[in-house]
Length: 340
Image 1 (tube, rainbow, N blue to C red):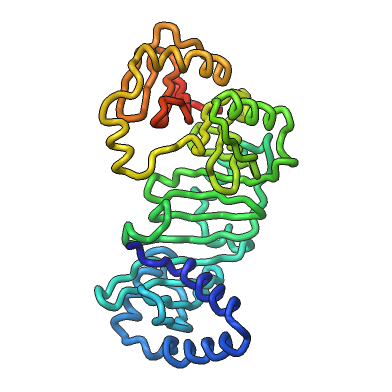
Image 2 (cartoon, rainbow, N blue to C red; image 1 turned 120 degrees about the vertical axis):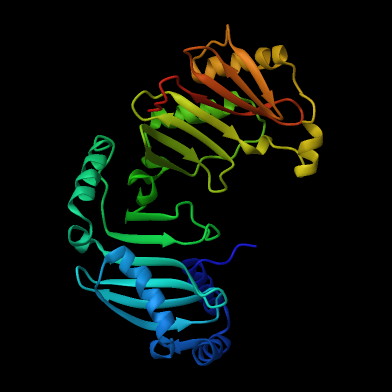
């Protein structure tokens, strides 16, 4: 079972207190302060040094001040401030049983971005932002620096910067040579009407009877991919459309998934549900209508419920079927590797 990360734990604790009756909440808060909180001077020198060393790795030598230690979570949550190149608050998670710092999370004000981030990385960031300037302007309102020392920390990336604005996030993956990706969220009504029609029609053409309406769109930039992703709040239906070409690259309706559990999945797809020829005959009209791709000359590879359609020098498609042999997902991968 995964341990609760510091940020999630703090939010969870606040939610529980706010949902309790006023008197109970007040008493719970008093007990928490008495039983679970320690002042910074109660941390032994070795632990303080261990925590400080992790911070220094990320920000260099600056004035580090520990403020509170909350032992009600596993690992402990330790808060403090950094003052030097720029002022920041930080939260660290510490496992007293293993004497390890599980993660370090530093929160800066946007005004200090140019002070904190080195010039080479800032130039790379500016160049990245210009790649999708035609679509929208990224509004920076704050940024964080995060590093986890354990895989089991509930975050997609281990070591990264995140710059955020209103419904916007930009990630810089430090472990992958500062590779950048961005996500900008919009209401359906604020999205391109013609593209919304394509997304809805693609989902309809896929053919799964039950469909959940889209609730929002994400404009995403990662590597050379630049996509509009249509989604619902439950992440059951999603369609990915290239921002420059208007081509559909992925359509999925997970309401078409009908196996009960992993055992049922393995049993259902122990043998191919569809032959290669049957899979082609079913896929041809759907792929033609959604992606504009003819599957003539394509070969088929089968692995459990996945059917991969390939042709030398052409776009590869991966389709997924349910236990009834109906495709509930198709995704296209161009030969040049660029989806936009």
